[in-house]
Length: 245
Image (cartoon, rainbow, N blue to C red; front, top):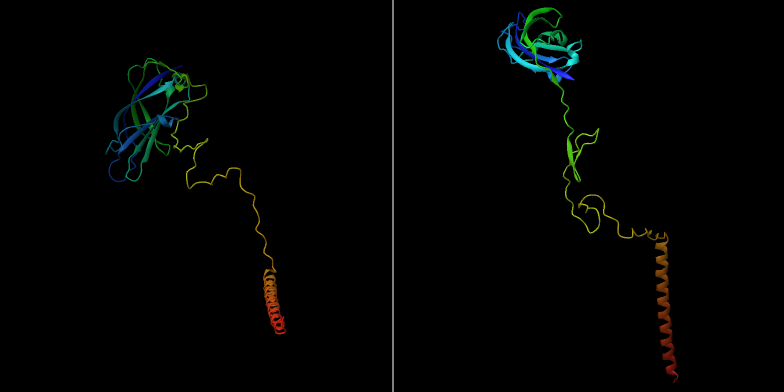
């Protein structure tokens, strides 16, 4: 498919609506292919020009051949006042591209269009030159290649550039596989063989206090009994001694 260069020169405008109460307007123009915001071009600001700005601004667009012979693509021009507290619209011009196309217009062709205000009324005139350059063929860019093991290979269909490779932080390697967890993060690894089964501590008897008292009294009584037996044996020995035994 062919495309044609469309060269435009925005020359000037005159008799435009004056939206400034004090002083003169500072006007510029924006030109684009309607529906394609990325194609927008902007002239310089003509300071203190009032209602009759002059730019002589040159630019160029590329139009696919089907749009040259049928409606559907318009050249859109918007004139604005450069204000301190915000820009104001002065008026617009819309030109169907197919109306401009003439294969024999190799030289600049002068045209004038009425400027339409934001209220939908004509006010002022825009002058421009244009011409179409020689048609050119669309060139399909070759598919980019990326480095793969064993050499360069073409990018598979439906896949663009390979995803970017990001540098990974280095980790200290342990004797096994994987990486050594950094201190202070996560949980400690379980011991080899797993964790020991949980054993519940013995429950303390509610009678522990009374049992201890019984044991204390029994011990005291037993000690006293042993002491009494010892005293009785000693007294018996002494009595037998008196009888000559």
